[in-house]
Image 1 (tube, rainbow, N blue to C red):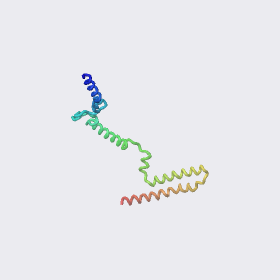
Image 2 (cartoon, rainbow, N blue to C red):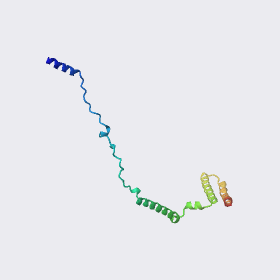
Image 3 (tube, rainbow, N blue to C red):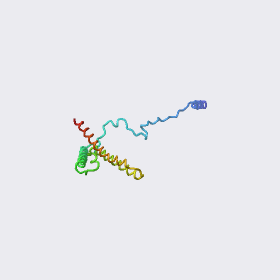
Image 4 (cartoon, rainbow, N blue to C red):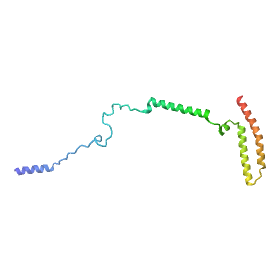
Length: 150
């Protein structure tokens, strides 16, 4: 009988499935890969970090640098710079510029025609006519200036 009782207990335990105990899954925030902040951390303000570029000293140096650069720029262009060809072009009246440009172009055309062995009498006559054109342009520009002033 004792044997029967033992066998019954063994057979009964054989049909009962024993579930292995699983360990709970670890949370990501508890893993080594977590780089974030913990709960409650970061609530207090971070301490002030000193920044040189926001100081009054830097702002004053920047302002003085800008003013100094402007003074040097004005001094150079107002007093130190020597006159150049561009100054002559900017101050010359338009009729003189136009006539000089036409003369230069005609002289180049005459040189090219002579190099090719062509007749240059028409080009030379046109070069002489540039003086007449210059006088006419001078009168025309003077009349336009008078209309603008009136």
